[in-house]
Length: 81
Image (tube, rainbow, N blue to C red; front, side, top):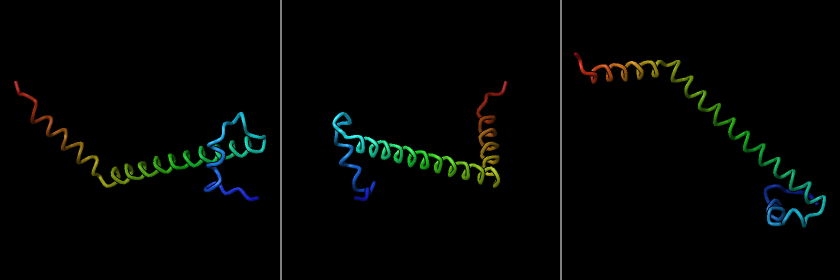
């Protein structure tokens, strides 16, 4: 019997771990590890994506222009004595 994690994982999640055999507990642990690894890979991908976006914005000069625009706007709003 070949385990397919995309189809067979549901039969292990519905069962109480106290009622599982040793092989079922091992399979449940393997499923949990795979879920954790996939979640970590997804998080790394999102972090790398936003790092690339920020790096591109910084290299293009858009962040500097936005910063200058905000500073000039704030300086206009401050009351002069």
